[in-house]
Length: 136
Length: 163
Image (cartoon, one colour):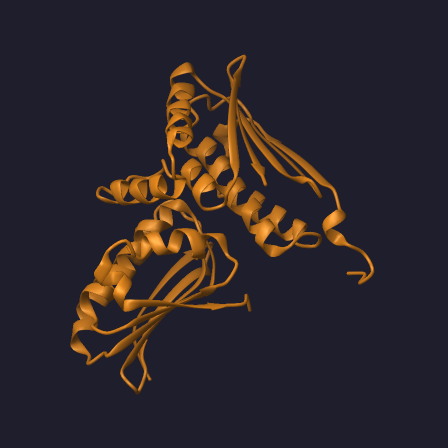
């Protein structure tokens, strides 16, 4: 396993949101989202992470992706666009199927996340499956 | 928790007033939302408490970020009991501000499919990453709140009810 990139939002010195991109030994990219996005401008913290994803993802022989939102408890509406940019980087730069892990009864992960993934685009929907899990 | 008690039969009410709005410098919306979430999860399913978290965050943030009457107050009232959840957020607004909010309400009420309106609005505002403008639509499309608005004596009250 190799960590490819890491993005974080801090508040008062505490980490409140983290996203990690790591490559498993079998060639699967695992992108985790953990914590809560509440700040007004998440790009202030995550623009470097987006740049790094765009730089490193094409460099590795990735054959599949898991995006894991199970530990992402909250996303305000200002956070939607940065999530869209992160998942766009995956769909545009990485080939293969994408599994999206989400909480089975969470409003934003069921109603809004599919919009942020842009599942209305057929080629994205065709690559995407959901793994609905109970809240940890 | 006592196992023989149905906690979802509990009634909880809370009211907060902060004045003037101009003195709010930190994420007060988040503090209130997280506090109420943490309180209500003692009695109600997490899914309901997360709705409270989202609605308090979005409505109070709207006031803090957009209210032009900075010397006025923001008031938050919450009531939850077995029949449902009611949240009201009130603040003094100008007539122009009220018209802006009402136009969003009119768009929501006119939409045949709120989820389609929400998706279209998210995609449209993403182009220039416009801040704001999604909260009320989100509450309807994502969290299934029924929204209403009143404008009395210069005070705007937005009410969200579930179910």
